[in-house]
Length: 95
Figure 1 (spheres, rainbow, N blue to C red):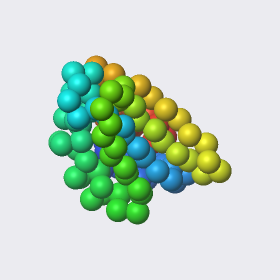
Figure 2 (tube, rainbow, N blue to C red; figure 1 turned 45 degrees about the horizontal axis):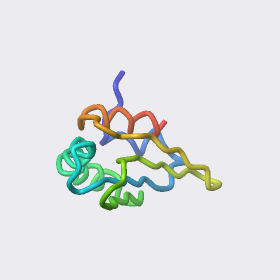
Figure 3 (cartoon, rainbow, N blue to C red; figure 1 turned 180 degrees about the horizontal axis):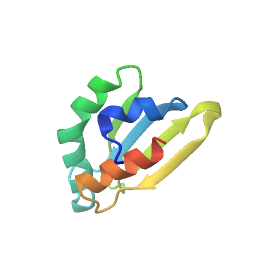
Figure 4 (cartoon, rainbow, N blue to C red; figure 1 turned 90 degrees about the vertical axis):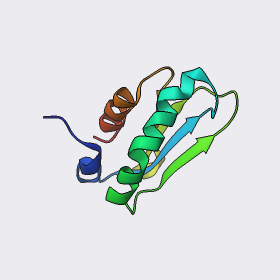
């Protein structure tokens, strides 16, 4: 069964924060920008108590960071990934 973004909170009780870091103009961040535009509003609406940070910085490679309880962090590269693949990465770190 595929987990949807709207059901993320139910599967991630230890997830404390999500961060997406991307370049506002690079081709490598195109999918990350598209993901933020299409999916961020519903993701935030469905997870109002989960801090979801979007950071733009010129010259960086796009990454997804997930911070869990006790300070554990996981980082996933989003370089050249389309928005649907980024949603899959989000599902994976949310478990």
